[in-house]
Length: 144
Image 1 (cartoon, rainbow, N blue to C red):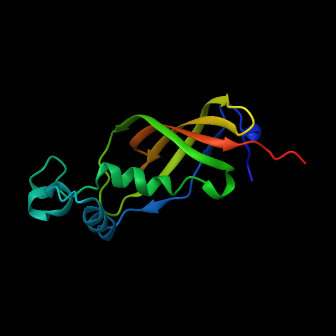
Image 2: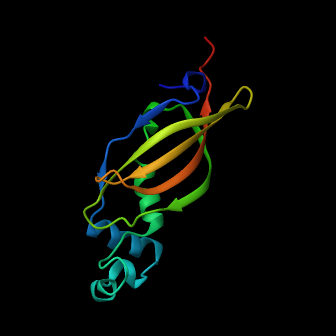
């Protein structure tokens, strides 16, 4: 388990990958109610600048949030997300991973502290698909 005190500014790590499927896009459209044709209509998307269907931006963020090593982190709470940018479309069959870097750490007392990560969501070609600044409240090591 990694506690607040275990993080270092400048520390970097890379997550495992996850491939975005057609089923992901259809299920996300059903769940969210976002049936915009760029995501779900093959004929409409053929005439778009992308030439094919692309994943919803929020699907990209949701799917990749599960790539973070949450099971290794002493997470207290998700604290927020800033400066979300989408730089390249995510297409059916793209495999995404996150390259994470610790940017900042703020002690919040006995509970723990907020760790700020720059998350570069990359596809299998090494292109930046998205960039987020994510803040997570991480617990401190228990006193024994």
